[in-house]
Length: 103
Image (cartoon, rainbow, N blue to C red; front, side, top):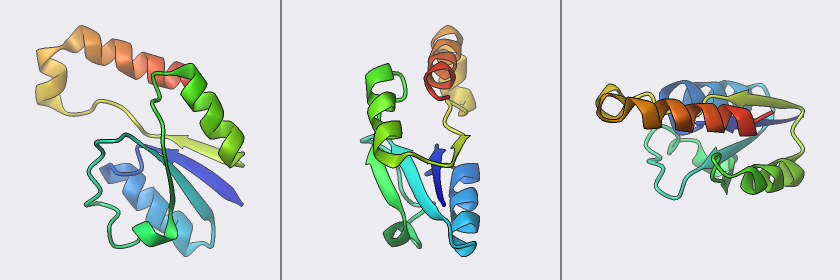
Protein backbone atom coordinates (compact mmCIF):
# COMPACT_ATOMS: atom_id res chain seq x y z
CA UNK A 1 0.00 0.00 0.00
CA UNK A 2 1.18 3.52 -0.81
CA UNK A 3 0.54 6.62 1.28
CA UNK A 4 1.35 10.22 0.48
CA UNK A 5 2.22 12.60 3.29
CA UNK A 6 2.36 16.34 2.69
CA UNK A 7 4.35 18.10 5.37
CA UNK A 8 6.47 14.97 5.83
CA UNK A 9 9.45 16.93 7.15
CA UNK A 10 7.43 18.55 9.94
CA UNK A 11 6.84 17.26 13.45
CA UNK A 12 3.57 15.39 12.84
CA UNK A 13 4.42 14.31 9.29
CA UNK A 14 7.77 12.81 10.23
CA UNK A 15 6.27 10.80 13.10
CA UNK A 16 3.45 9.56 10.86
CA UNK A 17 5.97 8.59 8.17
CA UNK A 18 8.06 6.60 10.64
CA UNK A 19 4.95 4.84 11.97
CA UNK A 20 3.79 3.93 8.45
CA UNK A 21 7.24 2.61 7.52
CA UNK A 22 7.22 0.42 10.63
CA UNK A 23 3.89 -1.02 9.41
CA UNK A 24 5.45 -1.95 6.05
CA UNK A 25 3.74 0.82 4.10
CA UNK A 26 5.39 2.48 1.08
CA UNK A 27 5.71 6.13 2.11
CA UNK A 28 5.86 9.01 -0.35
CA UNK A 29 6.28 12.57 0.78
CA UNK A 30 5.93 15.91 -0.93
CA UNK A 31 8.71 18.35 -0.11
CA UNK A 32 9.66 21.89 -1.01
CA UNK A 33 13.11 22.65 -2.39
CA UNK A 34 13.98 24.35 0.90
CA UNK A 35 12.52 21.72 3.24
CA UNK A 36 14.66 21.02 6.28
CA UNK A 37 15.12 17.28 6.66
CA UNK A 38 16.35 16.91 10.24
CA UNK A 39 13.13 15.20 11.34
CA UNK A 40 13.39 12.48 8.69
CA UNK A 41 17.14 12.02 8.30
CA UNK A 42 17.27 8.78 10.34
CA UNK A 43 14.89 7.02 7.91
CA UNK A 44 15.01 9.21 4.79
CA UNK A 45 16.58 6.38 2.78
CA UNK A 46 13.32 4.42 3.18
CA UNK A 47 11.12 7.24 1.85
CA UNK A 48 10.21 8.37 -1.64
CA UNK A 49 10.45 12.16 -1.62
CA UNK A 50 9.04 14.22 -4.46
CA UNK A 51 9.42 17.97 -4.84
CA UNK A 52 6.04 19.61 -5.24
CA UNK A 53 4.59 23.10 -4.88
CA UNK A 54 1.24 22.50 -3.20
CA UNK A 55 0.11 25.99 -4.21
CA UNK A 56 0.33 24.92 -7.86
CA UNK A 57 -2.53 22.71 -9.08
CA UNK A 58 -0.55 21.24 -11.99
CA UNK A 59 2.33 20.29 -9.70
CA UNK A 60 -0.09 18.54 -7.33
CA UNK A 61 -1.77 16.74 -10.22
CA UNK A 62 1.60 15.42 -11.43
CA UNK A 63 2.44 14.29 -7.90
CA UNK A 64 -0.82 12.35 -7.56
CA UNK A 65 -0.44 10.76 -10.99
CA UNK A 66 3.11 9.68 -10.19
CA UNK A 67 2.33 8.23 -6.76
CA UNK A 68 -1.29 7.02 -7.02
CA UNK A 69 -1.58 6.70 -3.23
CA UNK A 70 -4.20 4.66 -1.43
CA UNK A 71 -4.30 7.34 1.28
CA UNK A 72 -3.27 10.99 1.51
CA UNK A 73 -2.35 12.63 4.80
CA UNK A 74 -2.35 16.39 4.24
CA UNK A 75 -0.21 17.83 7.03
CA UNK A 76 1.51 20.68 5.17
CA UNK A 77 0.75 24.18 6.41
CA UNK A 78 2.38 27.34 7.66
CA UNK A 79 2.33 26.64 11.38
CA UNK A 80 5.11 28.85 12.74
CA UNK A 81 3.64 31.63 14.84
CA UNK A 82 6.25 34.30 14.01
CA UNK A 83 5.80 33.80 10.26
CA UNK A 84 2.03 33.71 10.43
CA UNK A 85 1.92 36.77 12.71
CA UNK A 86 3.93 38.81 10.23
CA UNK A 87 1.58 37.98 7.40
CA UNK A 88 -1.72 36.51 8.66
CA UNK A 89 -3.60 37.09 5.39
CA UNK A 90 -0.85 35.42 3.35
CA UNK A 91 -0.68 32.50 5.78
CA UNK A 92 -4.43 31.94 5.61
CA UNK A 93 -4.40 32.23 1.82
CA UNK A 94 -1.49 29.82 1.30
CA UNK A 95 -2.83 27.25 3.77
CA UNK A 96 -6.24 27.40 2.10
CA UNK A 97 -4.76 27.02 -1.41
CA UNK A 98 -2.64 24.04 -0.31
CA UNK A 99 -5.67 22.36 1.21
CA UNK A 100 -7.79 23.12 -1.85
CA UNK A 101 -5.24 21.55 -4.22
CA UNK A 102 -4.83 18.41 -2.13
CA UNK A 103 -7.82 16.06 -2.52
